[in-house]
Length: 117
Image 1 (tube, one colour):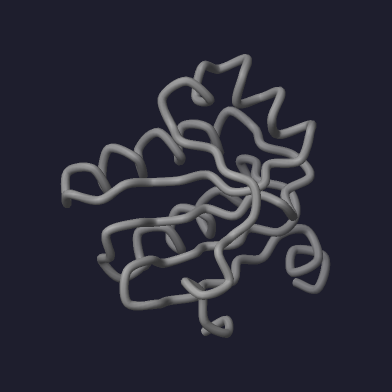
Image 2 (image 1 turned 60 degrees about the vertical axis):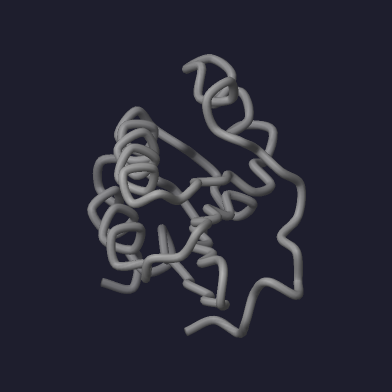
């Protein structure tokens, strides 16, 4: 169990107008269920920020989860924003075309985030 904890974890921060889900580690077939659960468990806010700065690998399963989360958030009238993807993840976003359909920003606005829940 300890190896799985080191492989992937998620932190969630909530403010009045945004939720930030920060993924850390490898997002692949073994960890995507936890990633998906964190995204779906996020309280409804106008913006869901997915902080990818700590992601070392984003597999096809992770890409599919981001696409599904975007559709789900938009259906609720919100926006999904990707934050700080590292170069390896940025390449995946470009290769899959996600970079063209999802906003990608550098840095999370500190005034919009609270301590991790």
